[in-house]
Image (cartoon, rainbow, N blue to C red; front, side, top):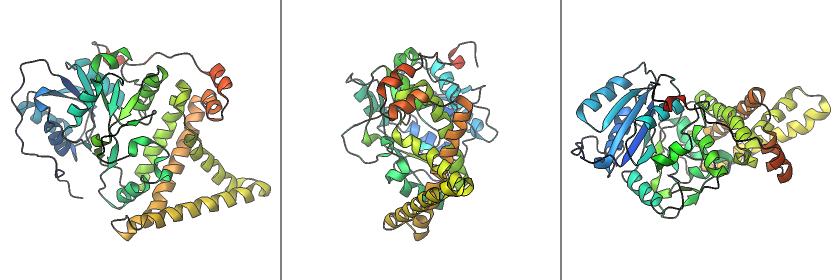
Length: 381
C-alpha cells in the first residue's frame, strides 16, 4: 500500500474556524518517531465531523525524525493543535501529559498510525451521553502495507489469531459489543478518567487494558460500537510482531496480578505452548513424545488456518504466510508471559479464577493499588 491518505480522508480540507466556546472534545495523541504516517493520520483527525469542537493535543516523546517538525508546522496553521513534551517518553506518560492540558468536557485517545472514521468522536460522545457506560470505543481493523501485515489481517479473522478479544470485530452494524480488558483506545468524560487516576505509567504496553481493569473492577460497562472501526497500520515483519506480542504478554502478567478478573482462559495458552515446545525438544524421552505429538497437532492447525485463509487472501503468498504469523504471535506472546512471570511473579489469583476456583481467587486477590501517574502533576513536563 502506498503512503497515501485513505479514500475517506481529505488531506486538503481546510481547518474550520476556531470555536469561541470551550473545546468539547480533547484528543490525546502520544507520538514518537511517527513521521511516516503522521501527515495522513493528522489529516484524518482534522477531518472529524466535530472538528470545530475539537482540540488535538500531541505529546512528543523525544522524536528523532521529523515528527516534531510536522506537528509544529501543523500547530502554526491550526489553532486547535497543541504540542507538548513527554519527558518520560512512554505512551501512558504522553497520554497523561495531554490529559493534564486537556480543556474539553470529553477526552479521546487516538494513535498516530491509526485512521479513525469521520464520525468517530460525535458518535462516541452521543453514546456516552446515554449514561449507562463510561467508556466507548470502536474495533480495530488492520490496514496492511505488505505481505506480513496482509497475513496478519487474515490471521486476526480467526480465533487462533484474535484469541477471543472482541475488539477485532469489524463491520458497520449499529449493534454494540460489550468488552472485557481487550480494548482499543476510547472516548470518556474527562472527569471520569481523572477520577480513575489516568493511565498508569508503569505499563509501557497494555496501559488501556490495565485501566479497563480498574473500570471493570468497579462494575462498569465498556462498549464497542462496530461502526467506529478504526484502521491501524500493523507491523510488517515477523520480528516486529514477535516483539510486539512479547511485550503484550509481559505486561499482561502485570495486569493479571493487579486485576485477576482481567485474565481469560485464552491467555494461558501461549505460555503453555512455549513450555510444550521446550518439553518436546529438551525433556526426558517419556515427556518428549507426548509433547512432540502436541506440537505436531499445533503445526497441523497452523496449516489448516492457511487453507482457510486461501480464498480470502489477496495473494497466494499471504495465505502461506499465515502459519508463520500465527506462530510469531503465539510464541512471542508466550515467551513474553514467561518473562512477565519471572519479573512480576505468578498471577495466582487470576490463574485460580480461570481454573474455576472462585473462592480461592477471592482470598488471593490483591488489595487495590495506587495509580502511578506522575505526568498528571502540573510540575512535570
